[in-house]
Image (cartoon, rainbow, N blue to C red; front, top):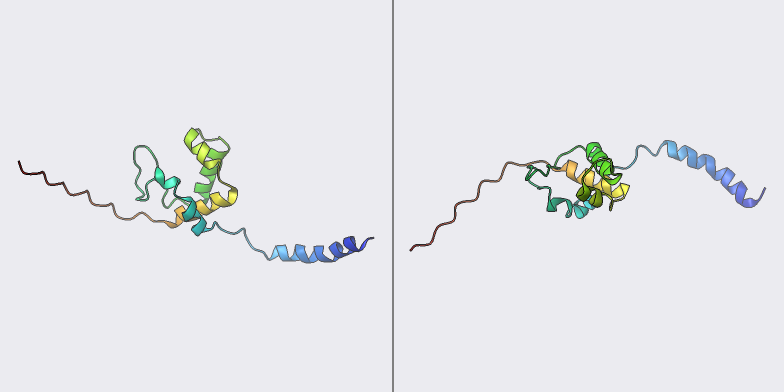
Length: 121
């Protein structure tokens, strides 16, 4: 056998053993998710309130969020806008977005804006 094959025969068991202790897959990168979120929050409100039929995405569990985006990406869910947006993201980017939005909590509703004074006539 060549030296190349001998080296791999020696390294392979160590790599296999190391993979047993690697633990579960890494969670999404929240900082990356925040960076990528600008397109999402154009329509989905950071307040956590549904508006004009667009659902709130704040606080959705990571697995559910990722599942929804993957279903839009694979066109299992029908919404051309979301299919187009989800289609741009990699698995790692979807995981990052899921981690970011799951970490956000809805706050109290913002007070209604004060009425503007009318000019004197």
